[in-house]
Length: 81
Image (cartoon, rainbow, N blue to C red; front, side):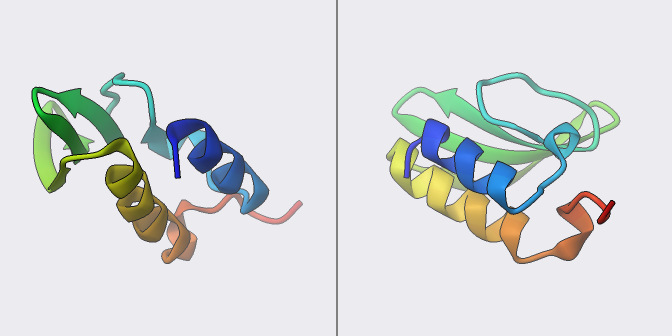
């Protein structure tokens, strides 16, 4: 899936948008999708440190991985209202 498709899926599953970044912005306590030379990286940013969760050749592979991380853990979801 692309970043636009991933954003739609995350919205549909009520994943908190404060906990992820899809367009290269690095925020604290956030899983970020970052373009890099020759591909993409998915990182977790916390207090200025970046932990690389995965490196991928394509946007599709990176987005699929990121979807798995965010959708398989209920801690990333917004509370039911």
